[in-house]
Image (cartoon, rainbow over all chains, first blue to last red; front, side):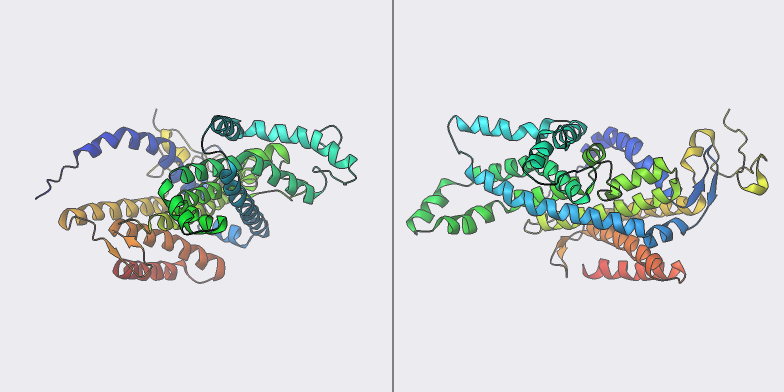
Length: 288
Length: 118
């Protein structure tokens, strides 16, 4: 049978395309233009060539914040994925517990990000905050506003609290889509709990977990609001992640050229990671 | 009024009206267009146009499993070529002091490789 080729439905995409062009493509083009020029404001620009890119690529400050960003994202994934899967496995499959668990789990996801930051800031204050005060009365020397280790600990704890639910919900959906026949077959074969997890549940969750890794990677790689409210990048530069550093450079110092170059490099890294995860996700499909 | 005077800001030209460039329309000056960046975007647009006509001529996108064991179509190959071109140029800027056109040359060689084998 000959399939008739009718692609006219693509015209329906035009409004969205126009909107995206207005709010994404035009600003992105502007960033590209800015990254090659120097400006002192009032729309006057001087051509600087590749100077800003060279400067950023050789800058210690950029290396440091990029390194911090990768370490942060790596730790986040290392904690949230196993924890999320573990919680999803222990959640009830039916009964009155299901809605309660689901609502409890989605609660942190519904809170605005700056509120999360403010909540944790107050929660962790060493003198009056519940967490900070408790830790100090237990004999720990805890002060996230002055010690970089404590600042990292608090930021990571906050992100785990905020985002593990996402991994939980995705894994739970993946677990629930497994047919009971698989479990019955495993029972007949006398498989242990670990075998069931390793050979049935984990392979069946592969797709949602790749999605979870992708989402968690992107979100934690571009994290801004929460550490901005919690630590502001401090103490010193200890939690000065890439996006915080970028905003400091662009708006704090008004170095628009270097900041544009930096954001393009940032964008390219994110784009590369997106492509890698997308390819991994689509690898087993018929086509990409 | 579309045209207003722009004032150059380098020390020798403070306060003097700047010569009008091609892109100096009032509503678009903030975008700071220059010929090199504009030609970059024109190049991207040309690439997409070429892809359109290629698809018209040989429909289906020529899907295959390349050396990365990924299922790719022509569009994927263009994306990979452009993205790797960006990283090749960045690596060239970061690691060497030679002329950037070498990186462009390497990128185009790599793009041919990608379109043939990936």
